Image (cartoon, rainbow, N blue to C red; front, side):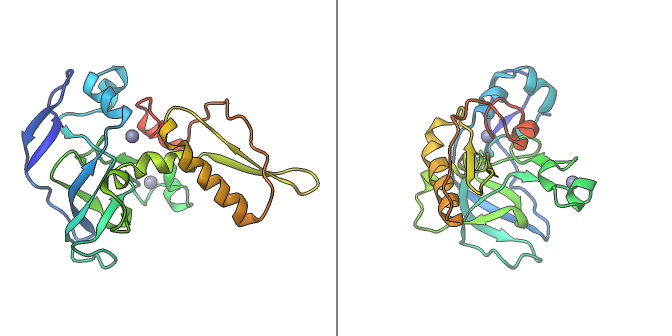
Length: 221
Ligand SMILES: [Zn+2]
Ligand SMILES: [Zn+2]
């Protein structure tokens, strides 16, 4: 298959012929239909200081994508061939202390598909079935390919309660401006869901979420 890969510890990427990923009994092989370029990919392309300390070539980039399930492992039941999907690309180990106490998002052994292992800038990508997110086939592929950054724009908020019972909702804002509409909709949903009024802050602080610490590429993924 064709794959856009970082082959050497130097600036640039190259289009390579790669082996279609082998997948295990709990994995899903997805035929990629669309992928988007993250700021992290640009860091890796440019081979900046962060990339030099994190990336271990050769590796196929791409951690924002959507596609159609091609094959599934023998233990996979919730996903089938032909499903339209995207995926959570942070893969936790399931065994460390954080994973065992329900804090898998800060897993000590967290790996990111497309950064620490081969990703979606290829015809096929291997994803653990637990990370697969089914999509409505009516969703255009151009939107299915940006669900990763959209999720990051939707989750970084902090709800709280003031004296007297009023609720507040603080929403951060930083680089991925294109997703602010999604962020706002999510915030609106949460407030409505609780049926509580909200007082929004100005979001000046750049309080990056935990995933950015693991990704570290300077973007908001
Ligand atoms: Zn873990
Ligand atoms: Zn990203």
